[in-house]
Image (cartoon, rainbow, N blue to C red; front, side):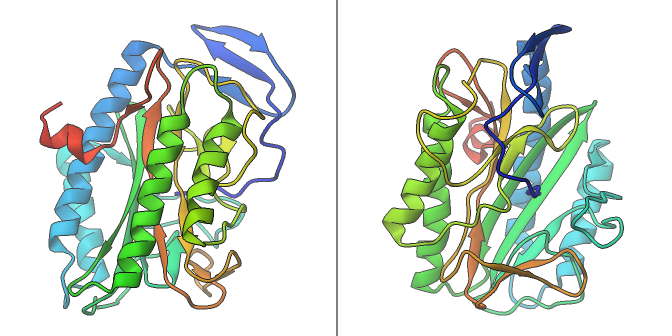
Length: 289
């Protein structure tokens, strides 16, 4: 789930590692995770990847969104996990969120409230979920096409996936937060998609939303210097025709303002001494990692 944020993401207050606080700039507090804590988040991330695989296999024409919500609840309960969405009540929502997954269809892209809707052939469905296991959170989103694909929808999904991969590739120690944002934004520009900067990626760990904020557009070489132990949820999302958004009357579901289709890809990652570790990857599940 993408948080809304202001544009002071480059300012930070302190880092915490092993109980030691390192003063930086103002506003944010960043917590660096130990290898053991990252391993715990990896357990959660693996479960989320498996859950999204399960739901993707069930999302067919004729399936109701509420069936997918029920299945997600079953899997979370069976694993002994806790939903990070249930009772979530940010400033932009209308009352507490009373579901365990966001399901957004076609022109809806973020925070889609599961409701009585039957999936149709060709629908573009985005599934976004965050859970906690033993106190450690992971967050991931995936867009899929239900039934018969349209070429333009495939292109849109591919753009978010490539932008996510570019952001992950830029998440190297010594780089800066702006390098991640710039890499994501560059892919959007290559595809000709505008970028909304109201909602984007974020830190996470013990809670779903921690500092820093990670916009999907930025300038390279700017912002927080990336350090091993920093854990982030990167989540590029694009609408085919606009960077403007509107809210549904439910107060949660966010749609493209022009009704164009949308897509969203998200992974939880950990900054290491080398390449970033992707904690919610399907490939890691397939390989039994």
